[in-house]
Each structure stands twice: as C-alpha cells, then as structure tokens.
Image 1 (cartoon, helix red, strand yellow):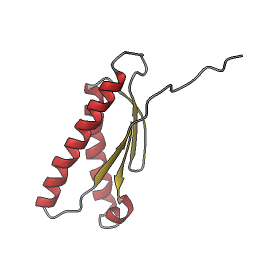
Image 2 (cartoon, rainbow, N blue to C red; image 1 turned 90 degrees about the horizontal axis):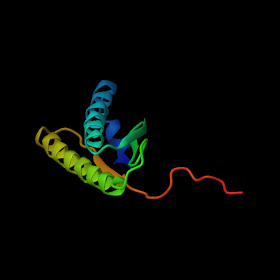
Image 3 (cartoon, rainbow, N blue to C red; image 1 turned 90 degrees about the vertical axis):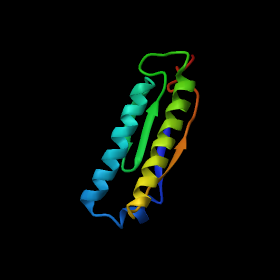
Length: 110
C-alpha cells in the first residue's frame, strides 16, 4: 500500500516548517496505529509518502483483505481530519492510496 498527499507542495507552502512536520507526524502516527491493528508492516516514509505491506514479515492468508481494510480506515481517518481542519479554517491534505498485489521478492529460477 502506498499513500501520498494530493497537492502536497502547494499546501506545504502555506504552513511553517514546524506546522508541516507536526501535521505529517500526526497523520503518520495515526497510519502507524491503523496498520498495526491490521498486522501490516510499515516499509518506509519519504516526505509525504507512506508505504506499508501486508503479509510481512510473516506470510498470512489475509494480507490482501487486511491491507484493503487498513486503506479504507486511513481514508476515513483523513476525511475526518480534513473536516476538522476545514472547520478551523486551516489548510487540508487530501490523501491518495494505491494498493498492489503480488510477490514482494521473486526467486530467480535457474
């Protein structure tokens, strides 16, 4: 699963560095809690991007469903957060989420 914030650069320009870091930290901590709930592994964050994978480090049969459910919960969290920001008259981030399925690593066959 991969997420990023739509229009990140233009919104980030309206925030101080401290506000921007606090906002990303707030969102990513919520994402961490959500993926933990669904036994998904955070792979990395880069700027406004958040990457996680289901079925790691221990393979399971529910990884696809778990990842989709986590993605829906992240979208719900961001929508609620967005409404709070709008109510307070503050800039808002909208999220984009992508999910891919398949092998993370394939063994080379000789």
